[in-house]
Length: 69
Image 1: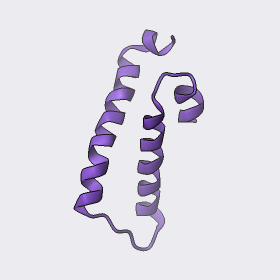
Image 2 (image 1 turned 60 degrees about the vertical axis):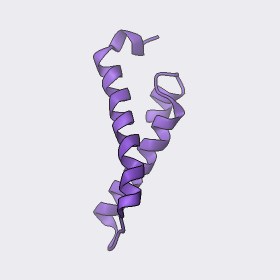
Image 3 (image 1 turned 30 degrees about the vertical axis):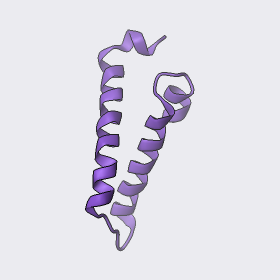
Image 4 (image 1 turned 90 degrees about the vertical axis):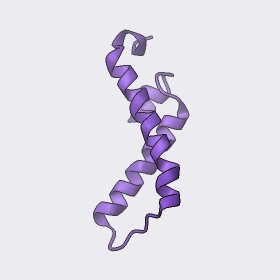
């Protein structure tokens, strides 16, 4: 739904959708898989992406008029 309502309308970049999908998959695996593996390299790669995603969504929340354009 993120892609449908925000990315396809240009409110968020495609990279935001990719980041969300990756983080969602990791979260889902953490909740339901028997064993998961996360190393420092993976966290170091995902952390800046997650931080950017949060800032992009925060911007939409704080500036709803801009999101409507």
